[in-house]
Image (tube, rainbow, N blue to C red):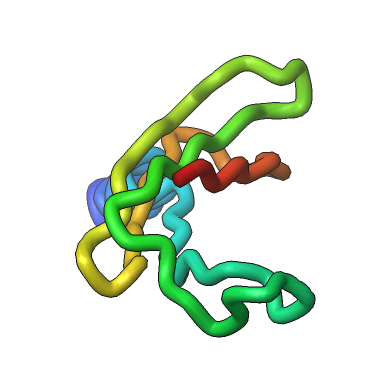
Length: 82
């Protein structure tokens, strides 16, 4: 029984540390802009933590899609540049 509890605890901790957090989205130009509903193709998406440190950066694809993974859960500020 102790081995089973140890195994389940280890698997749970591994899952929390391995699958911290992920973000997926589509980068598009704000609707108030004159070129509304345009995708940001090959744009740069940067993620900053609460201390304004860059923690992740990725390019969008030809449809404006992107996906990021983070080691820690929390609040991040995303910045999209073209």
